Length: 305
Image: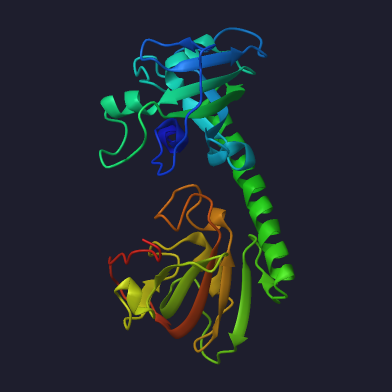
């Protein structure tokens, strides 16, 4: 698997709407003005070009957490010393060892001058953002990283599935747990064919977060495509993994709900202001039709996009 698939999204600047300031008079500074303080807990040699590492990162705006991989999936990167970072962690990786931690203070004024912030972002002059980085582990090969990545993915899915199970229990919702950790509640039993892999299905759907905020629907006119059933071939056309996992519990004519953990949804990839990274999903589903798949290369967009 290509290393770019593992690069931590948080290594790039995130867009923020509410910011605060904090001092950094005791920190060292890089040539770009990034303030930093290294906590040397590691052993061995400093990190160098080509090293494969696992990291955790936390970004804070005052008391608010913008991003925190310590509670989700860690990041994986291959150090490329030819790509010098500008006002971010990449500038100082060569000073760190596996096991070390570092605290940094980003100047938003500097980031704006470097073109790393949206031009429409508003903030007070002198505003800063605080970040924490931990070098968790080093790897000898990309195969080692891929194996570790899969273990972390499995652990994240277990955490999310457990959270969903608690949510359902608290809401007194009876649902069937699928093998991969999603949940299905059938409210109206259908009598037609099962929505199995390789079949074309027509679906009406309404998607919300666990908090009840709608993010997409083909029955709500607010989303601009109401009235047209969503058609796709299970296992062939691109939909989130949770749909493929859950729809096999539906027959033609069935209605129900799919409760999908983020790792079977959009994972750590934010889709909108509502669909942030690691958002669990709920879909109200009506399975209108199940039929043989036509020979076509059409690729309908996934719900939520």
